[in-house]
Length: 467
Image (cartoon, rainbow, N blue to C red; front, side, top):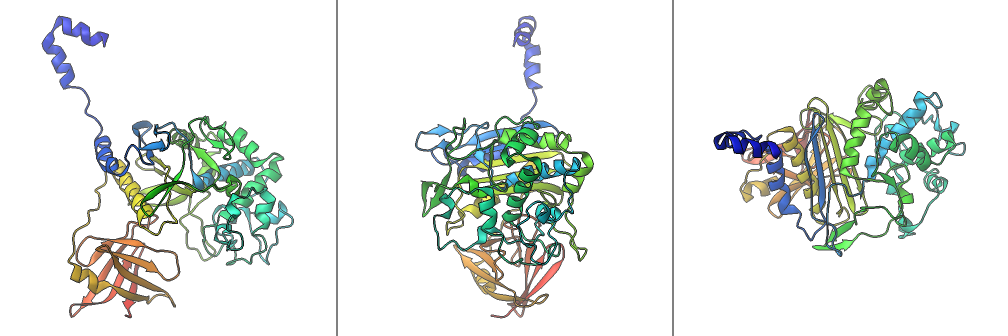
């Protein structure tokens, strides 16, 4: 300011030149503002967004409310539950113990949890890290006998005993199946090997070592400065989220953080403050199954091309909150999105729409062209409705249906439901809800009627229309 006044006194025209040469705002800012503002009103649950490019924050804003009842606006430093983003923190804790020679990735978990049944197979620590253990996700348990189970406080061993008797879903190392149970076991192994509680070890050796000041393992009773309130939306109305004991997410989803601290975390990870480069490289490498194929998961991170560039990322969903964090390696772009509204149990399309919005923010951050949907005649859309059977495997169908003028798809095996089809042409559609791999679908017509469709991911898959 002093320099500007001085120049004004000497030469009025020169200061005009200075202002004319002021740097233009980053185009990312205007694009994201215009995209996000319509979705987050001041008196509704909100979102915090941080984007950094090549070590510099280029976008950091919050929209909406941290507490609707008290009318508290969201700020970027505020603290949200981050759900399954916790897994990469637990993975780093395990990898530190590996580097110290206290455990091996190939150790059987029975070495540390004596009474966990082997079920006839060796289940390794690496299997737990990569979701290839075959241990069923305890979140999939039938809780109809106790609908209030999420309100109960569990000790770690109690939580493990709630699922340790289930049979394996497959031989360890032969398949990938996302399982929170594996990360509960990893947290307990950290406890057994370190001689400290999981939380005490992590706070000292991981959170503090990374320089994090707004990241906590905290239950509902603890006072946490700038803690954001969580909400759900059902039938068009916002509600305070139901109470859920954080103990049920031990090691797999019990952290809370801010977008600023998540960015600090990414810096600490990439600068090898916590584990060595060669260790991190393994964490960022997709796991290879026994048949030689690769999964899309490493040690605590998803790894895939999204969209068309290598992306290391994770998402988290927990009562009242959604978290998304991504790092694009080639572009050196980091993105963190935290929102205090989760309606996964809602029967509407609300949560899917939010994830599509977050995906569009990623495209803007990358400077990628946003895929635009075109309008297709209702009669054409109606002709595609029906059931399609896979020709590449047995007993699998894809149901195409229409809702509110748009096509959706459900897989019979339950791995994909309410998947939106965005029209790119009259026959070709993009599936934005499949986040870990770019997916398109094309209807093939004969004599003016659809007879099959082709789904393209890493390769093409044919589905024949049967009704």
